[in-house]
Each structure stands twice: as C-alpha cells, then as structure tokens.
Image (spheres, rainbow, N blue to C red):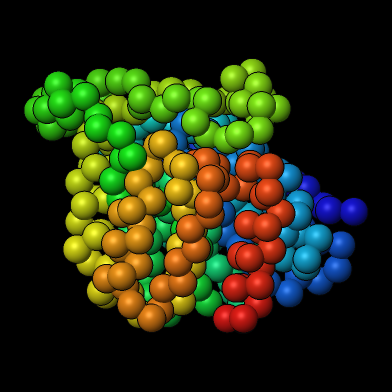
Length: 277
C-alpha cells in the first residue's frame, strides 16, 4: 500500500506552506520532487504519484505560494526568484528526502519553467530534470492589452489580479479530469500582473539560455497543447543539444499526466529516470 502523508513548512520569508509525500511500500530506489502548474495544487497529482510509487519511487511535492493549501495571494509572487527560493528550501530542508538516493526534479507548465530556471543555477545537484509542457511561450496569443497592462502595472500595481486565460477544457481529453478540476475548490483562475509578466519574460530568456544545459533533461509536450507552445519546447531542445531528450506526444493535450494514455507517459519517464540513475 502507498503511504500518503501531508505536512506543513515555512518558506524563507515565513509564509506557511503545504506539502505532500507518497512513499512506496519498500525502501525507495529513487526520489522525485514535483512542482505543479499555475492555478492548481499538488493534490491533483495523486494518481501520478501513486503510479511512480508503485515502481519504488518516492514522490514529494508542495503547493506553490498563492496556490492550494499554501498561504499567499492567489496566483501571485512578489518576485519570480522567490518561487525559486521556495523550491530550494523545500528540496534541501523541508522535504527531508534522502539526497544520497538518485533524485530528480519534475515540473509541469509553470512548474516546468520554474524547475528549469532552478536547474540552471543549481547544476549537478540532481540526477536529472523532467519538464512537462513547459511555458516558454503560450500556444495562444495573449490579449495585447493585457500584456501591455501587465508590464505597465508590474511596478505600479504588482498584485493586480487578472484571469490566467486558461480554458479548462484544453487541459485533458478525459472528461472526468475536467469535471474534477471544475469542482475542486483549491483550483483558481488567477494570475497577478507581476507574476504573469515575469513568466512571459522568463520563458523567452530561457530559450536564449538553452545552450547552457549541462545535465540530463527530459522534455515532454503534447502537439495538441493549446496552452503552452510545443514548438517552443522543440526549439529549446535543439538549442540544448545532446543533453536533452525531447518527446512530443501526438494528439496529447496540456496535462500529459491526465490524458487517456497517461501510463505511456509515466512509463517513458520512469524508464528515462532508471537509465540516468
């Protein structure tokens, strides 16, 4: 039986944060730290985490500030680097994982953008990085007025809440997943002017820094993703070179881990982890 537990911790600035752990029945062979996407929370990865745990992989995750059961204004961070500091503090202090075991960092969407930003400044501290549908560029054209407004207000009114423009129906082809998402009170559709602007700017900058990749990287994206651009992931992979393994999933939507053939995605990731362990 998979051992599931939840715990609380404090970020560097004292913000109360919520975290969760899934432990396999026997001693873990590997560890994966998971960072979720915009407007959701770590609890949405329960089935995925249990699948990994069934293969002897310990999974730890936490709710980003402003998300889920963690404190903070919904969809806001004072600075993008504050989120990076949260990942570092969780990984090395709060999570209590065994760093002597092969450990990986997995990020989805916003979480993937955060993870690759983190990885570039902490190279060599993990076995590998897995990115699911990273947000280097949006798959749609954001309203120009909203982008301009966000850039103008990120210094004047950084906490101004805007819609994150996420169409729930584009997350997965599994209707049950969509229904659960809509009924989940911990999900939200907010992003502030500051976080939204910094997310767009960071994504573009990361594309220019892809050649700096010097660690094993698995990049996965669905070619039917209507939220984050799979062509940008392909471009990143080309710049990153041989260290990056690119997997484009045909006809898959944004949440690869919630698609009808999600086990194929999980198995591909697990095989990649074993190869680099």
